Length: 219
Length: 90
Length: 227
Image: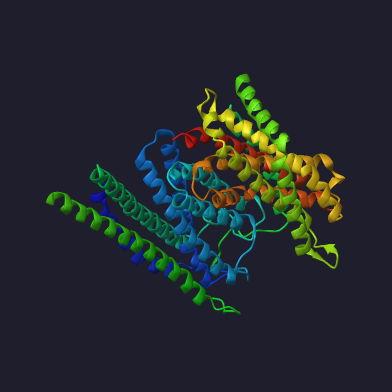
């Protein structure tokens, strides 16, 4: 089923990514930040994709821990990698925007600190899987649970504490020109996430098949 | 029992959150993007290099990652194919 | 329920009895904590006086570092004597084993803090004991949160490769919120006009994290420890 969905999804993703720059360029400029605010149309969607990846990894880890389904483990590791990639895009685009908007590359406010911590948890997940030896899949699943628990905290931190980072109120109050461009980019990024997941899970499946073939050959 | 503990914890959190919120009333946080019609005159830092760097990095990072998946997948499938041909030989 | 805690206390008493015989973990962890404090002392002191607000950070970093060491060593000792496997084979609630180990390590760290906290107050002339109840709550809840996650990961990593470096790699990102809350709470406590509401808010945060971490750890301890 996933194989058949792949080509049309790629076409859809291409459409989104080709049209995105047009919509972003058309979007009105923001009053205090001007041109640099347009980083927003990649910054927010990449963090949104990161949150989705973190939550999917967490849920898959729960299924793997409590039900032992191997496909859940494959989804978990794929999603963790994507969480790291999207998080990295978010962590680079943010400071580039901040340099102009706030005058500094980084601030240790609640949102930025917790977002960095969330990203690091998933890096730690990947390190554990890579270097933890056999049986580290289950251990990593435990780590992913803590990562997933962190996501709502990161999201909501900006509404509770006084942070230099804008609050979540920004999104519902966007004007139509900005809103359209944002949702377009958001859907594009989520499509990208889905596609990359499919490819990455397939890689895990092929690796598992390879191992099984090697084991059968040894017998 | 664990669920009760969680609910208790969230309740405690809510009361703490109120206190932090009081602190935040003292200085305002940006919570709206207000658009303007014409571009303001640029001040010290030019925005374009930062914008290009951000978008560029996003594209490059995604591309590198997808390419790495493709490369690893190709290698595994190559190995599988070679094993398949070896077993059919036998 | 009663049996759960009976098992947990039994395991805690076992750990404490082993520890009191040799005092190995207590003394080495204590010495390490004091050494860390001295390193910070040289790092953060200017003209013989501590940098402002550094004391809270120094205190909690010393706890975090000493805690990581204590966790690593405790489970190394378990691994050496294969104790954990024997415990897991016993017909008891797995989470009870977790709670037992948690209480043991918490007691160890509490003993270390009893020495280290007054020492820091002395070395940095910090009025840490002006509000002893609040300080106690901060230290208790903060150490509990850190230890809760640490016990889970320490036990998890017993059979893993590279466990020495992986424990801090896993532990620190997840427990950073606890450390932050501890530091911020202690910093407010040290101010001349302490804002009670803010300290209570940070204590509330710590309680929240403790609940979440302990709940998650109790949930995942069994599936993660079984093969």
